[in-house]
Image 1: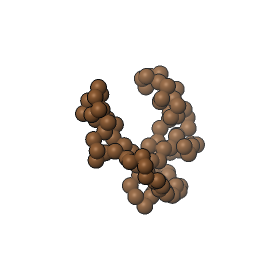
Image 2: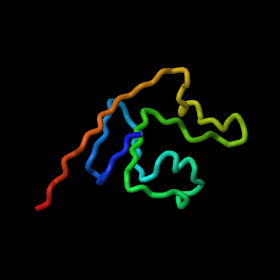
Image 3: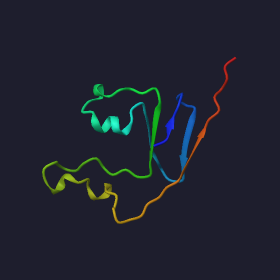
Amino acid sequence: MPRLRRHTPGKSAATGFAPLNVTARHYTKTDMERAGYKFQMKRHPETYLNLDGAQMGAGGIDSWSPNAYPMTPYRIPSGEERSFSYTLKGVAAEVAK
């Protein structure tokens, strides 16, 4: 996961040829996986950037049966090879005088 230091909102841009899911947080993926609640996480000064080429649905009709999987239109087939590309570049900030 790319890590941005001293990131200011509006100072960078991620572009791709297909839609991307882009998330920027002050928490690592490990922090989020280990914590049960947000108050249990330590906020980092760094911004952690996550770019996903595809994202499968969060859940299905219920959580106790075969319907627990995301509905078919929202699934990502596991047997297909996938790739995506993106460009991450800084954006010039306006200088106030």
